[in-house]
Length: 448
Image (cartoon, rainbow, N blue to C red; front, side, top):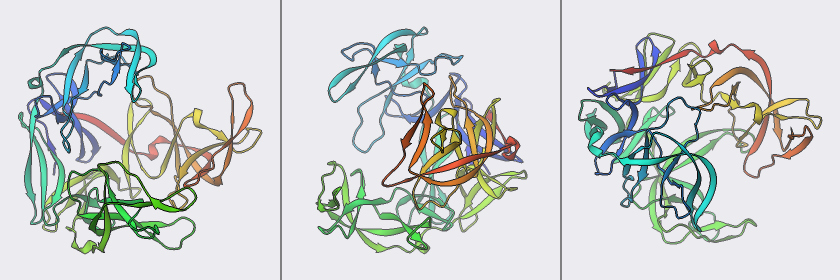
């Protein structure tokens, strides 16, 4: 079962997990020789635009001449395109102009706009704009709705060259987009109104839900309910409530704990938390693992056994855990558990003693976080693209720290406070080296 397909011009980038398990990872425009992703072009149509970023930097003190700052100047291939964001209508995605860049870079002053005006940032290697590319040069596509079982429908992007990909799923009964939830084995509503820091009453005892835009009336308020005791680490479960009546004013606590009226951005909307919603009312889904190798693709099917959408990442059948592709040194990809590793660089190492002799790595987490990483993945700085993993070590949790130590450029060992009101800093000792084959290989392919 595939959730994508290449066309005559757009070829699918995929992660090949072996044994027939493959995962979609974007598009390659074979005519332009560029990776691309779909978004609104300057003519208003969805088109597969080159993977670049919007240029909000300039080479002059008046902020009139746009340039692309080249942060990866050591890359063997010079950038060819840059994007310029256009004004957007409320509640619509930002349309983008695509410009071809001049072939040769120049070292220029770089400016950007902020609330005070046009401000000097740095001197850097930049590429100037050459000509704007006509939007028709890029493959167009449309979003098409297709049924998935009796209750769900999938929104599929279908390109004019025949390429396609399942974008997202919607629950037609509830009228919300949803995504697979492993805990409830259901299609869980996406982007419910959040709870946090705002209250409906002047005593700050009744939490209020907040929506950070006014584009649509929300259906649900989402929150996390703690399981177990109220101290130490704990597990949480997601809960849903109906959205209650809208609120014109809300309250919040000051740094001293007092409850008072609270200001908020004009587009934010607030709601009372309504009645609990029983997850049994969600569309049921069933997880399947497809493939004959160690790594399987995670897909979700409806109650009528119609395969609907795939998860990002794979399932390691041997270790019985989820994993995601990570770049290792030597241009290899390996599937590492996203919640069981800690990434670090040598520059981030700290010490657990005032003599700076006991090296440690640290992370910041909630005091209630029970997830303790088992492996440390050491990244090496890269002058071109993502930083690859050089080595892997086991981790031993030493405990929570409010103070660690580091060496200055002159070699002095100094104290560094890591106290935090809302989170804790955990210290780990690096243990034995781990063979990277602990994490299975993944192959990156382009299908035509």
